[in-house]
Each structure stands twice: as structure tokens, then as C-alpha cells.
Length: 51
Image (cartoon, rainbow, N blue to C red; front, top):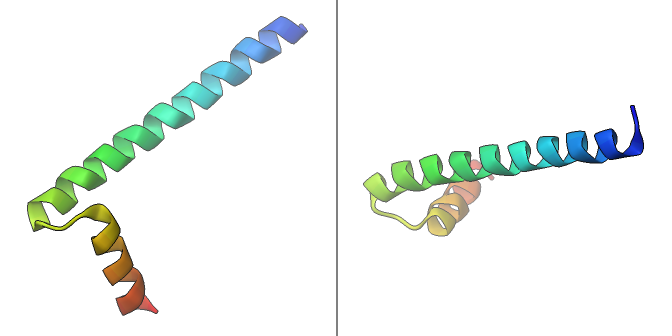
């Protein structure tokens, strides 16, 4: 694989990972929104209850 191909391939992987992360976060946001809490507050409460 040439250097250029490697850069392109890495770029595709990185952008794919970022897109997947954003989709996951949006999905999480929608679920949490239904519960009527901010994601951060919900996460903090969950961490407190788990810990």
C-alpha cells in the first residue's frame, strides 16, 4: 500500500468511527430526552448509583 492509500484508508476509518460515535450519541440523546434529563446529569446519576 502506498503512503497516499494508507492516508486515505486511515481517513475513512477515522471518519467512520467519528460518524458512528455521533450516531450513538444522538441515539443516546434521544433516549435520555424521552426520560426528561440532560445526558450529563443522567450519566452522573448513573455513575453515582453504580459506584
